[in-house]
Amino acid sequence: MLDMTALSGLIQVGMQNPRVKQYLSIKKNTRSNPENLVCLEGLWEITTALDAGLELRAFFVCPDLLRGDAGRAMARRIVGSGVHSNAASPAVMQRLVDREGTDGLAAMAQLRRWNWGDIPLAEQNRIVVLDGLEITGNVGTIIRCADGTGADAVVITNRRTRLAHPKVIHSSMGSLFTMPVIETEVAEAADWLRRHGFHIVTTDTDAPVSYREVDYRGRVALVMGSEKYGIVRAWHDAQDVSVAIPMGGRMDSLNVGNAAVLMLYEAFYQQEPSRFRGARTTDG
Image 1 (tube, helix red, strand yellow):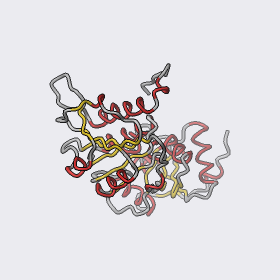
Image 2 (cartoon, rainbow, N blue to C red):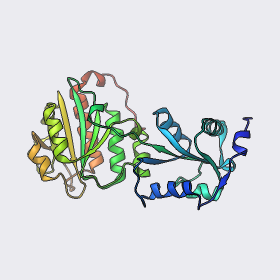
Image 3 (spheres, helix red, strand yellow):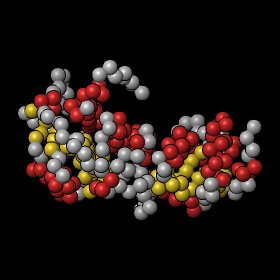
Image 4 (cartoon, rainbow, N blue to C red):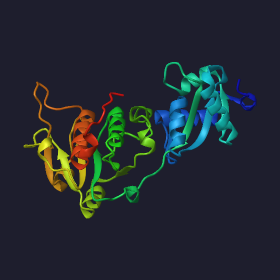
Protein backbone atom coordinates (compact mmCIF):
# COMPACT_ATOMS: atom_id res chain seq x y z
CA MET A 1 0.00 0.00 0.00
CA LEU A 2 1.17 3.53 -0.79
CA ASP A 3 1.36 6.06 2.01
CA MET A 4 -1.57 8.44 1.39
CA THR A 5 -0.78 10.84 4.25
CA ALA A 6 0.03 13.69 1.84
CA LEU A 7 -3.43 13.46 0.27
CA SER A 8 -5.34 13.23 3.52
CA GLY A 9 -4.15 16.72 4.47
CA LEU A 10 -5.54 18.43 1.39
CA ILE A 11 -8.42 20.88 1.73
CA GLN A 12 -11.53 19.80 -0.18
CA VAL A 13 -12.87 22.38 -2.62
CA GLY A 14 -16.34 22.95 -4.00
CA MET A 15 -17.73 24.41 -7.20
CA GLN A 16 -17.29 27.99 -5.99
CA ASN A 17 -13.57 27.60 -5.36
CA PRO A 18 -11.63 30.13 -7.52
CA ARG A 19 -9.36 27.47 -9.03
CA VAL A 20 -12.27 25.17 -9.82
CA LYS A 21 -14.02 28.09 -11.52
CA GLN A 22 -10.84 28.98 -13.41
CA TYR A 23 -10.45 25.37 -14.60
CA LEU A 24 -14.04 25.25 -15.86
CA SER A 25 -13.79 28.65 -17.55
CA ILE A 26 -10.71 27.51 -19.47
CA LYS A 27 -12.35 24.23 -20.37
CA LYS A 28 -15.50 25.97 -21.62
CA ASN A 29 -13.70 29.03 -23.05
CA THR A 30 -15.86 31.47 -21.10
CA ARG A 31 -13.11 33.93 -20.23
CA SER A 32 -9.74 35.07 -21.56
CA ASN A 33 -6.76 32.76 -21.12
CA PRO A 34 -3.63 34.95 -21.25
CA GLU A 35 -1.46 32.32 -19.53
CA ASN A 36 -2.19 29.76 -22.27
CA LEU A 37 -3.48 27.19 -19.78
CA VAL A 38 -4.99 23.81 -20.67
CA CYS A 39 -7.12 21.39 -18.69
CA LEU A 40 -5.80 17.86 -18.23
CA GLU A 41 -8.13 14.97 -17.48
CA GLY A 42 -6.79 11.82 -15.91
CA LEU A 43 -3.49 10.08 -15.31
CA TRP A 44 -2.52 9.64 -18.97
CA GLU A 45 -2.87 13.30 -19.95
CA ILE A 46 -1.16 14.52 -16.78
CA THR A 47 1.72 12.07 -17.24
CA THR A 48 2.12 13.03 -20.90
CA ALA A 49 2.15 16.74 -20.04
CA LEU A 50 4.75 16.26 -17.31
CA ASP A 51 6.91 14.11 -19.60
CA ALA A 52 6.78 16.95 -22.15
CA GLY A 53 8.03 19.41 -19.52
CA LEU A 54 4.81 21.37 -19.06
CA GLU A 55 4.35 23.22 -15.79
CA LEU A 56 1.31 22.29 -13.70
CA ARG A 57 -0.46 25.31 -12.28
CA ALA A 58 -3.15 23.50 -10.26
CA PHE A 59 -3.97 19.92 -9.34
CA PHE A 60 -7.20 18.26 -8.18
CA VAL A 61 -7.48 14.77 -6.77
CA CYS A 62 -10.47 12.76 -5.60
CA PRO A 63 -9.11 10.05 -3.26
CA ASP A 64 -12.39 8.12 -3.49
CA LEU A 65 -12.00 7.74 -7.26
CA LEU A 66 -8.29 6.95 -7.47
CA ARG A 67 -7.60 3.69 -9.28
CA GLY A 68 -4.40 1.68 -9.04
CA ASP A 69 -0.98 2.34 -7.63
CA ALA A 70 0.07 4.48 -10.62
CA GLY A 71 -2.65 7.05 -9.95
CA ARG A 72 -1.90 7.17 -6.25
CA ALA A 73 1.83 7.51 -6.90
CA MET A 74 1.24 10.37 -9.35
CA ALA A 75 -1.01 12.17 -6.86
CA ARG A 76 1.63 11.90 -4.15
CA ARG A 77 4.35 13.04 -6.56
CA ILE A 78 2.44 16.16 -7.63
CA VAL A 79 1.32 17.12 -4.13
CA GLY A 80 4.87 16.60 -2.86
CA SER A 81 6.29 18.82 -5.60
CA GLY A 82 4.51 21.88 -4.22
CA VAL A 83 1.97 22.35 -7.03
CA HIS A 84 -1.16 24.08 -5.72
CA SER A 85 -3.29 21.04 -4.89
CA ASN A 86 -6.79 20.41 -3.58
CA ALA A 87 -9.04 17.46 -2.90
CA ALA A 88 -12.29 17.25 -4.85
CA SER A 89 -15.43 15.31 -4.06
CA PRO A 90 -16.67 12.76 -6.61
CA ALA A 91 -19.37 15.21 -7.67
CA VAL A 92 -16.88 18.02 -8.28
CA MET A 93 -14.45 15.72 -10.10
CA GLN A 94 -17.24 14.60 -12.43
CA ARG A 95 -17.76 18.26 -13.35
CA LEU A 96 -14.05 18.74 -14.04
CA VAL A 97 -13.68 15.82 -16.44
CA ASP A 98 -15.73 14.68 -19.43
CA ARG A 99 -14.49 11.12 -19.56
CA GLU A 100 -16.57 8.23 -18.36
CA GLY A 101 -15.02 6.38 -15.43
CA THR A 102 -12.74 9.16 -14.22
CA ASP A 103 -9.61 8.03 -12.38
CA GLY A 104 -9.85 10.87 -9.87
CA LEU A 105 -7.15 13.18 -11.28
CA ALA A 106 -7.34 16.55 -13.05
CA ALA A 107 -4.92 19.43 -13.48
CA MET A 108 -4.20 22.72 -15.23
CA ALA A 109 -0.94 23.14 -17.11
CA GLN A 110 0.66 25.94 -19.09
CA LEU A 111 1.25 25.33 -22.80
CA ARG A 112 4.52 26.47 -24.26
CA ARG A 113 4.37 29.43 -26.64
CA TRP A 114 6.32 28.59 -29.79
CA ASN A 115 7.90 31.01 -32.27
CA TRP A 116 9.64 30.79 -35.63
CA GLY A 117 13.00 30.30 -33.99
CA ASP A 118 11.78 26.96 -32.59
CA ILE A 119 11.62 25.43 -36.07
CA PRO A 120 14.89 23.54 -36.73
CA LEU A 121 15.73 24.49 -40.31
CA ALA A 122 17.53 21.80 -42.31
CA GLU A 123 18.10 20.70 -45.89
CA GLN A 124 14.64 19.13 -45.79
CA ASN A 125 11.71 20.39 -43.70
CA ARG A 126 8.02 19.61 -43.53
CA ILE A 127 5.50 22.11 -42.17
CA VAL A 128 1.71 21.88 -42.31
CA VAL A 129 -0.35 25.07 -42.37
CA LEU A 130 -3.96 24.96 -41.15
CA ASP A 131 -5.94 27.88 -42.53
CA GLY A 132 -9.27 28.67 -40.91
CA LEU A 133 -9.99 25.17 -39.58
CA GLU A 134 -13.11 25.18 -37.41
CA ILE A 135 -13.42 21.64 -36.06
CA THR A 136 -11.28 21.04 -32.98
CA GLY A 137 -10.98 17.30 -33.52
CA ASN A 138 -9.50 17.86 -36.97
CA VAL A 139 -6.91 20.29 -35.62
CA GLY A 140 -5.81 17.80 -32.96
CA THR A 141 -5.78 14.90 -35.42
CA ILE A 142 -3.55 16.81 -37.83
CA ILE A 143 -1.16 17.82 -35.04
CA ARG A 144 -0.91 14.13 -34.12
CA CYS A 145 -0.28 13.18 -37.77
CA ALA A 146 2.34 15.93 -38.10
CA ASP A 147 4.14 14.43 -35.14
CA GLY A 148 3.77 10.90 -36.52
CA THR A 149 5.31 11.90 -39.86
CA GLY A 150 8.20 13.79 -38.28
CA ALA A 151 7.00 17.21 -39.41
CA ASP A 152 8.81 20.20 -37.96
CA ALA A 153 5.87 22.44 -37.07
CA VAL A 154 2.19 23.23 -37.47
CA VAL A 155 1.27 26.79 -38.41
CA ILE A 156 -2.26 28.06 -37.83
CA THR A 157 -3.61 31.05 -39.76
CA ASN A 158 -7.10 32.57 -39.63
CA ARG A 159 -7.60 30.75 -36.32
CA ARG A 160 -11.16 29.59 -35.68
CA THR A 161 -10.62 27.32 -32.68
CA ARG A 162 -8.43 27.46 -29.60
CA LEU A 163 -5.50 25.16 -28.94
CA ALA A 164 -6.54 24.87 -25.29
CA HIS A 165 -9.82 23.17 -26.24
CA PRO A 166 -10.05 19.71 -24.57
CA LYS A 167 -10.90 18.06 -27.90
CA VAL A 168 -7.66 19.34 -29.43
CA ILE A 169 -5.72 17.80 -26.55
CA HIS A 170 -7.62 14.49 -26.71
CA SER A 171 -7.42 14.10 -30.49
CA SER A 172 -3.76 15.09 -30.63
CA MET A 173 -2.98 12.34 -28.09
CA GLY A 174 -0.60 14.71 -26.32
CA SER A 175 1.31 15.71 -29.48
CA LEU A 176 0.17 19.28 -28.83
CA PHE A 177 2.51 19.37 -25.84
CA THR A 178 5.67 18.81 -27.91
CA MET A 179 4.90 19.78 -31.52
CA PRO A 180 5.76 23.44 -32.30
CA VAL A 181 2.43 25.11 -33.12
CA ILE A 182 2.58 28.75 -34.22
CA GLU A 183 -0.51 30.94 -34.53
CA THR A 184 -0.01 33.87 -36.88
CA GLU A 185 -1.37 35.85 -39.85
CA VAL A 186 -1.17 34.64 -43.45
CA ALA A 187 1.14 37.48 -44.54
CA GLU A 188 3.66 36.79 -41.78
CA ALA A 189 3.61 33.02 -42.36
CA ALA A 190 3.94 33.31 -46.13
CA ASP A 191 6.77 35.82 -45.81
CA TRP A 192 8.70 33.59 -43.36
CA LEU A 193 8.24 30.54 -45.59
CA ARG A 194 9.39 32.44 -48.66
CA ARG A 195 12.45 33.90 -46.92
CA HIS A 196 13.51 30.42 -45.83
CA GLY A 197 13.08 28.74 -49.17
CA PHE A 198 9.91 26.72 -48.57
CA HIS A 199 7.90 25.36 -51.50
CA ILE A 200 4.26 26.27 -50.72
CA VAL A 201 1.74 23.60 -51.74
CA THR A 202 -1.95 24.37 -51.32
CA THR A 203 -4.81 21.87 -51.56
CA ASP A 204 -7.90 22.50 -53.67
CA THR A 205 -10.54 20.13 -55.01
CA ASP A 206 -10.41 21.95 -58.36
CA ALA A 207 -6.62 21.88 -58.76
CA PRO A 208 -5.47 20.24 -62.04
CA VAL A 209 -2.48 18.47 -60.44
CA SER A 210 -2.68 15.31 -58.30
CA TYR A 211 -0.95 15.45 -54.94
CA ARG A 212 1.10 12.39 -56.04
CA GLU A 213 2.63 14.29 -58.98
CA VAL A 214 4.44 16.98 -56.96
CA ASP A 215 8.03 16.96 -55.70
CA TYR A 216 8.00 17.46 -51.91
CA ARG A 217 11.74 17.19 -51.38
CA GLY A 218 13.61 20.10 -49.81
CA ARG A 219 11.63 22.49 -47.65
CA VAL A 220 7.88 22.21 -48.12
CA ALA A 221 4.80 23.77 -46.51
CA LEU A 222 1.48 21.96 -46.99
CA VAL A 223 -1.52 24.31 -46.70
CA MET A 224 -4.82 22.72 -45.65
CA GLY A 225 -7.99 24.80 -45.72
CA SER A 226 -11.22 25.16 -43.82
CA GLU A 227 -13.68 22.28 -44.09
CA LYS A 228 -16.36 24.71 -45.27
CA TYR A 229 -14.60 27.51 -47.12
CA GLY A 230 -11.25 26.11 -48.20
CA ILE A 231 -8.04 28.14 -48.32
CA VAL A 232 -8.19 31.94 -48.38
CA ARG A 233 -7.12 33.79 -51.51
CA ALA A 234 -3.92 35.08 -49.88
CA TRP A 235 -2.51 31.55 -49.65
CA HIS A 236 -3.30 30.87 -53.31
CA ASP A 237 -1.49 34.10 -54.17
CA ALA A 238 1.55 32.83 -52.26
CA GLN A 239 1.49 29.25 -53.53
CA ASP A 240 3.99 27.54 -55.80
CA VAL A 241 1.50 24.85 -56.78
CA SER A 242 -2.02 23.74 -55.88
CA VAL A 243 -2.88 20.03 -55.77
CA ALA A 244 -5.99 17.89 -55.53
CA ILE A 245 -6.64 14.47 -54.05
CA PRO A 246 -8.40 12.33 -56.71
CA MET A 247 -11.83 11.08 -55.69
CA GLY A 248 -13.42 7.93 -57.12
CA GLY A 249 -16.88 8.06 -55.60
CA ARG A 250 -19.76 10.48 -55.28
CA MET A 251 -18.09 12.78 -52.75
CA ASP A 252 -15.85 15.53 -54.09
CA SER A 253 -13.49 15.83 -51.13
CA LEU A 254 -12.13 14.19 -47.98
CA ASN A 255 -12.35 15.31 -44.39
CA VAL A 256 -9.44 17.73 -43.92
CA GLY A 257 -7.90 15.45 -41.27
CA ASN A 258 -7.84 12.54 -43.74
CA ALA A 259 -6.50 14.77 -46.51
CA ALA A 260 -3.70 15.99 -44.24
CA VAL A 261 -2.71 12.39 -43.50
CA LEU A 262 -2.27 11.69 -47.23
CA MET A 263 -0.33 14.89 -47.84
CA LEU A 264 1.96 14.52 -44.85
CA TYR A 265 2.76 10.88 -45.55
CA GLU A 266 3.49 11.60 -49.23
CA ALA A 267 5.95 14.32 -48.21
CA PHE A 268 7.40 12.04 -45.52
CA TYR A 269 7.90 9.25 -48.06
CA GLN A 270 9.55 11.47 -50.65
CA GLN A 271 11.91 13.08 -48.15
CA GLU A 272 12.77 9.92 -46.18
CA PRO A 273 12.05 6.87 -48.39
CA SER A 274 14.36 4.64 -46.36
CA ARG A 275 11.98 4.93 -43.42
CA PHE A 276 9.34 3.04 -45.41
CA ARG A 277 11.40 -0.01 -46.29
CA GLY A 278 10.27 -2.94 -44.22
CA ALA A 279 8.32 -0.64 -41.90
CA ARG A 280 5.66 -2.17 -39.70
CA THR A 281 2.35 -0.32 -39.68
CA THR A 282 0.00 0.35 -36.80
CA ASP A 283 -3.62 1.39 -36.57
CA GLY A 284 -3.21 2.68 -33.01
